[in-house]
Image 1 (cartoon, helix red, strand yellow):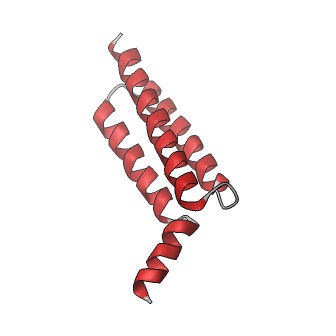
Image 2: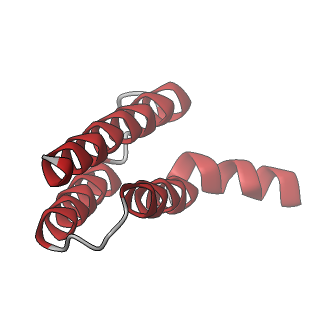
Image 3: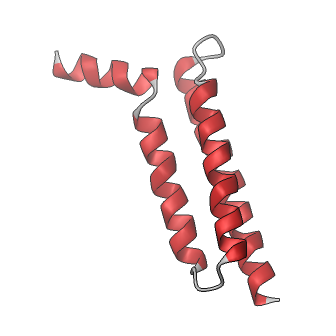
Length: 91
């Protein structure tokens, strides 16, 4: 039961963080410049972490959620809207 509950919590965190990423990028870039490739990689990374959490019992739920949150931030940093903002700040 504990293993299933931890996996469900990780799944909820993955869905919420992916939805937040999608909303933020849509608000920043609009529909014409939406980063579909990064969103796809975020979904694949979340599925990979879910399968690892389900397979290995010694992984803590907080560790997996933290790893996915950092992965989401990393994906967000390498999208065109964020790069354009950094270019504008630097120049």
